[in-house]
Amino acid sequence: MPKKILGDIQVKEKPWGREIWFAHTPEYAGKILEITAGHRFSLQYHKKKRETQLIMQGTVKFTIGKKEDACEEVVLGAGDKVDIAPGIIHRAEALEDTVIFEVSTPELDDVVKLHDDYGRSGKGNDEKLDAKLAKKKKSPRKK
Image (cartoon, rainbow, N blue to C red; front, side):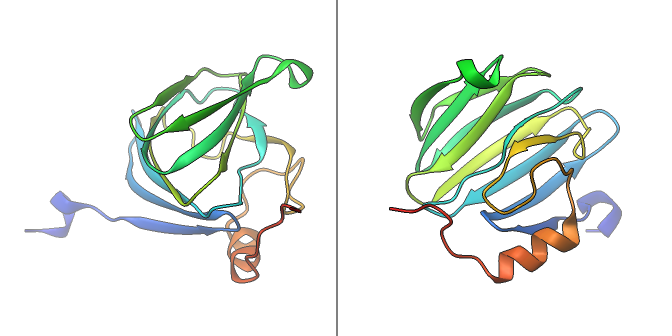
C-alpha cells in the first residue's frame, strides 16, 4: 500500500516513557502513551487542546481539577476514560506500566507545565530535552 495512504508513525521518547503519534491532522490527533511504572507526566494544562484518554492497560493515579490547590486524585484502570477540557489541570502517574490511548484536538504543542519531575516546569514540549532525559530514565519518585 502506498505510504501516503498509510502515513507516518512518530515515536517520541519521553523521560516517563514514550508517545506514539499515529495521527496528526488539522482536525484531530491520536497518540498512544506508554508510561513506565513509578513515572508521571507533568502537572499541566492546555490553553486550547481538548483530549480524551482511555486507559488500555495498567493502572494510573490521575490528578485533575480546575485549580492547582483543588485537584482530586482518582485511581483509573483498563477501560476507564477521562475527558480533559482546555484549562483543566491534570497528570497521570503510572502505578504499574501503563498504556493510554489519547485522541485530541490537533494542538499537540499546547502545554503549560506547572510542576515536573524532570526539570521541565514552565517549559513547553522540547523533543531534544525529552530524548536526552529519556536516556537517563530512572524513577524520579522517592519511595
